Image 1 (tube, rainbow, N blue to C red):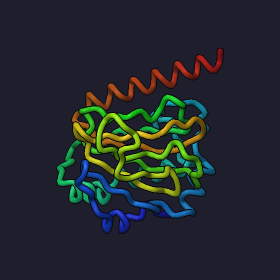
Image 2: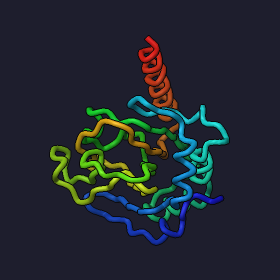
Image 3: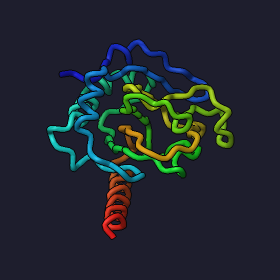
Length: 207
């Protein structure tokens, strides 16, 4: 089955202030979301995890395959006025948010486009709701708030003022992040960093 509702992305408006972003509720159907959560990898620690260990029975792998397709890339290029030809892509999964996560940031300069796909079936907590911010100092000075639920898609163009963050939350919180990167080298650095981080967490948990 196809997972991505590309027609919703095609119809979505790209906001220009305070930076270029678009929010697409229901980018995944409820059936897709159900299948994803039934087979999602058991991530019980904070941080980002690489996707190399995913197997073909995991529905999130099918979603990633669709995000890799030319139709999705063409929509992003057209909407954000960027050429992503031959730009490497980096994926990571999250399954658990720590209390220290969500601090205000812009994303690193080696990222061109950030894609966030939220995989929680429902979100009724006050924390953990990503906010599009007007500045880098106040998480309450925001123009939009995104509950990380029901297959909502957030895409933004990284810039020096692409500030975002959320109020603290600790607990399960599932999302898929995809980035188009400036170079394969920067992608490799992030991958190594995340892999080492995951390995350290695993060893710590085992101890």
